[in-house]
Length: 67
Image: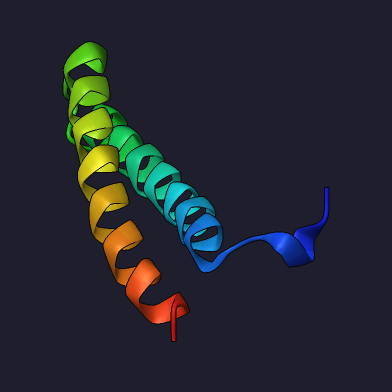
C-alpha cells in the first residue's frame, strides 16, 4: 500500500475512525462501570456516541486536511 497516495479524505476518514472508536470505548466503560448502567444499554449508547463523534470529526478533519 502506497501511503503517499492517500487523499486528504482518506486521512480524515481514518483519523475520524480512530477518534470515534476511542470516544465510544471511553463512554462504554464510563457508563457500564462508572455509572453502573446495564451493559447492553451502555453498549447501545456507546455506539450512538461513536457515530455522532465520527460524523463530527470527519467533517472537521476533512475541512482541515484539504487546506
